[in-house]
Image 1 (cartoon, rainbow, N blue to C red):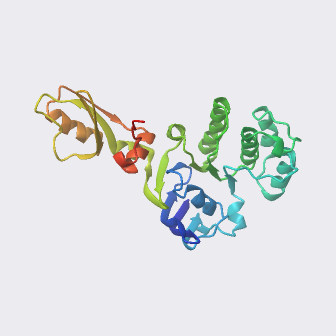
Image 2 (image 1 turned 135 degrees about the horizontal axis):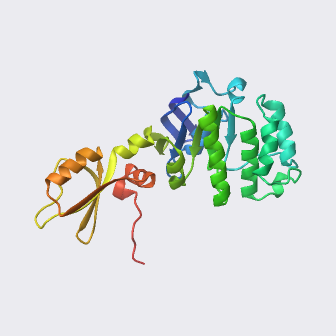
Image 3 (image 1 turned 60 degrees about the horizontal axis):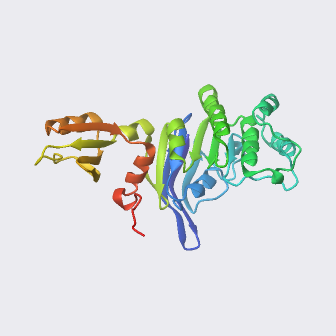
Length: 297
């Protein structure tokens, strides 16, 4: 569906994207994660057709995105900083988008008034950031896009509205096969909604998998071994820590295989659990070199 191949983008001497590959399946909710400065917003602007890459190729259904109106007709993009005309209200922006997007659904727009209780005539510049985000979703959902690209989409929204918006998005994915790419630092939230994940760092894609596959291939093991015992050799240990007698290990591999090896070492106690997306993010980015440090001040 959405494919980026070997994308390079430089701003003067700074390399923002360094041979990035990205693949978003049709009908997926794809979470793009990475530390600040990883290049997430840069690749999103390429996917939306705002930036042109220095080299590489970006396509949607085999068609290049940049300066391609037919592709952009099918796409809605909500950036972190919402765009609107200076004096425009929501109704003005609706009329603008209605004239551009042939699939704009006025019936749906009118129904969404019950969800987004906003003053349509009030200038958007006078709305709070959270209200501007609501307005952006109101308009984007009314476009009935086939592709929805979101950069920190629910930042500034209260918990009830966040849940409401995700419910609308997931409903569109289920009913219409909408493809969603979302970048966010709220990994707990992404874990609830995404089925595919890409982890970026320094302009490159570190890994890209379905969330289920990702969680099946890295596990956390907590164990207590008898005196003189310990973790068997041969396991791919990414990180080790201890809390009293309890040893904690982050291990790459299938949970069933790891559990078999651990059990053979006759521990006094052990537990094997999948990692959260946040834990996967931390350890895939470098384990102990990227985790939270304790400092004595």
